[in-house]
Length: 243
Ligand SMILES: [Zn+2]
Image (spheres, protein in one colour):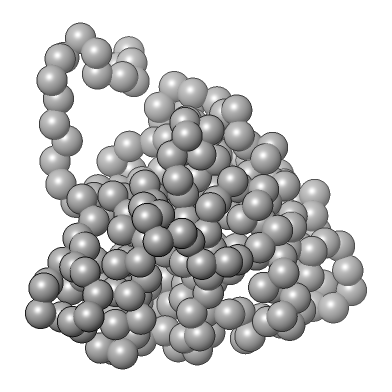
């Protein structure tokens, strides 16, 4: 995807370890934000070379197609090693440069506890990069920028979300974005003992979205955790019915 215009400023940047992570954990949210006219962007830290199926080049094409379906204005993948994302200064600098280029108000990271070490490491690395990006004296030569808000996409984690985003109108489009990864998800023989067929992916991802939707009284939802307390202006307008 081409570089953004000089005055481009992202509203939302989703950072994930692997291509196809954001499609599964916050794709509906990105669609919802784009539908509101906000500028959404995606940074994948690895190129997906460790995957059983498909090549990194195939995944790059698929990731671009998925970004188009999600309405994201910019997407890039760094070249951190797939399967061993590490919290190093060099990796922080690479992310800081992207943060200072896109200048997002909100950053979406994976939840910090995860079965896949790359996901947990991405949360730590992304958080530190957001902090360092605000320091004038860090990696001088680029204008500092600190995102206002960090939220953690918690779909992969078994934790109670702080809030749910209603993705009901966008669930089919989100599924299309995930299915753009033909090399990973289309029914095929390579690695078929390891991968679930397309129909099962649909059933599983819709069931997860339904589960989180039910928690908030909507049909389909995506879960997020925020570390801060929420702030309320008017008690009569707080959504989600108690009983
Ligand atoms: Zn992943």
